[in-house]
Image (cartoon, rainbow over all chains, first blue to last red; front, side):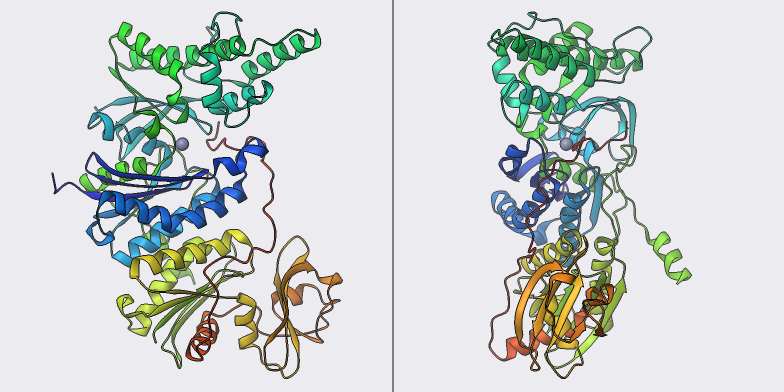
Length: 359
Length: 214
Ligand SMILES: [Zn+2]
């Protein structure tokens, strides 16, 4: 398979500096430097701290990825980078590095969408995505149901959160329970010793008149905080494991129910789940049960590929090369609110020419 | 010596090629919000204009600030990555030193650039352009600058800097010239590390990770 495209991907949309190297759908390297510990005491990602860390980590992380893959930069067929969405200043570090690297090596540059990358990473685990694919993306930054007919050109949003992202809800509940940041892994761990049926927390946007594929986690978060507060006021011990398990149950119930419904309604027999929250053990378990029951094939990458990383960007970049999609130009900009429908940022020479003409 | 130089620490996006004695090509655009878009096309352009193959470069000189961080990092990460990919050393230059190198003044003077938030990045120099104070960041009104000042930061605060002369922003040609002279004299330049001078704003914005429009 040596003729499959060899692509290096750079991801800096949040607090992970990720550099991955992929050949076709084979993962060769996935180097990640995280600044998560620097943010912990603030209870969330501090953009300036993340950007400073990206700058420091960039070249060492590229070097580590090259060493792991056992290749030289000159062997590459292309450089891919997350152009958005994400934190503006953080994205800009990765985009600038990718441009410099591509230019220095005379390789094509591909500015790609972070969300499409989260979907495409599954190719590294389970082979090429079926077309179309239904994707549930759940992380600290996004909670969306997406239908993709072609991962390099066509991603359509069916629904998304109208308030908090699922991962944000985990962070906030962890804060309410005094479990620290980030909340996802610790809530998952605590929940294993709890009873998911102990408390019936609300399922957002699940009424008959609510939008079918949108999510809301803000009401759930408030309900959990109120419940915990009431216990504390009454001088009772808060059953942390039960609260964690019941909260997690409410989140995964809504996510999996809506995702399976979207598959059935659209006649799609594959569901992929990606994003950091896809690492949640209860979400994986419940999704498997419900997909099995509905005759849907579930594809969830291993937890290490679900969180933000460079491999997912390389995976999409490699697919772009393989399908002969147009590269980006060297005036590529980082776009913190890049719409999910824009899988890649195309060449802007026409735009640039118009700009020049006006000068 | 064949240096590629650039700086993104001021509103200017500036790039130049220098052969150790003179500037072969220079590009200069002032747009504080588009450093990321403009820098690499500028680099590409100056190399073409100078007729220099990037593989024949012997080093990169980059302004390491001080300057507003988001733009500043564009230059630094570009320098680091180019240096890595091309296998050439990266030399850091204090942006204020490069402005001082260009300044046409006879006595001691202060260089000041805009640090936003009603502050300036500044440093002072003697008549031989040796730095005597700074670089630091502070409110213009609280400084004791030299009689003559240089830079866009000085123009912003006429009460603190009554006598201001050019240039406003840094030029990569002059930055390269400064680096070339220092290197030729056997002096060390700075590491490719940003002069932030301020601690990061440690505030998590509300809805910090919500990057998708609802
Ligand atoms: Zn993500």
